[in-house]
Image (cartoon, rainbow, N blue to C red; front, side, top):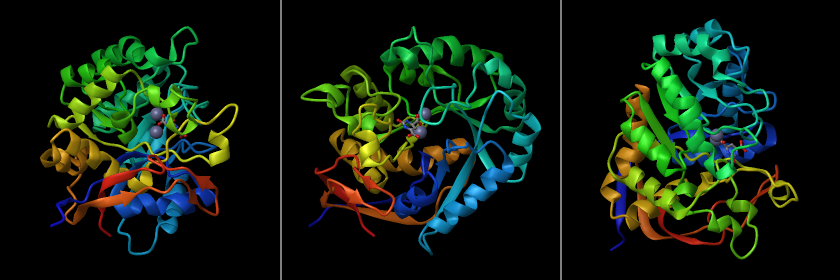
Length: 345
Ligand code: OTD
Ligand code: ZN
Ligand code: ZN
């Protein structure tokens, strides 16, 4: 008999849905798997105020197949000039679920990000006061810091001092990639949690660099040494409520990745649950998959749990080598592989 796993419908607490033709091409994949998703605001230009977020939310809803029952949760892109009262208003009106801190230059479309957290002190004070979540891209950008060390240095230089200064602030350390990150989140207060992507549970930096350069394994923060991947697997599958699902699915056209300066980002939305499920099975932790995927996130955000259920079947799932879409050819995470679990539609 085929093994099955039925769990509360999960949410994706970190996704890039893009805009225009790319949004049309990718939104369906997220909506098929998840009830809600925290939508990252790094469009060009970025989603920096309430009006832009409302309009973007409408475009997302229009791009999702009818009857999908999918709710996008919007985030505000913080800049050096963000008005604290705009953030408060967006949160109180139910437009913003969270705000996003991109250190300027840290990742795709982060040039308008924050150059010094001191510049958003007023915004963060308001967020701490109203209980609004700060989503953090936790990497420093200084040229003198090695790209593999940027997360650990961010903790030391930025995040630890920030939480000392504002101990009530709710922080999600996004796409955690390091053992130092895991230890920091575990030892911080209940107001600090983290998302973990499928790729950082599956691959270490060898996947990018051994046997040739593999642009489809390149994302930011970059995958690190094996010991970091193992720490992330322990964190995700260990039962702590501080860690939850956030795919960081970040589609780019195939030719933009396979280039002399390839874009960062892994497109994992089409088979995200299948990918996570493989990890939980390998770690003998399928009984903890539901809390990671469907409970810890909403509890941290103070949102209700989803009431409907999804089922995964263990009868094989072939991941295509490429998805041809009107927007672009997209190479998904696990391209050409067979995963064991498959989401039943
Ligand atoms: N990382 N690519 C992108 C965002 C993320 O840092 C991230 O959240 C992107 O393309 O938007 C990536 O590698
Ligand atoms: Zn990021
Ligand atoms: Zn991201």
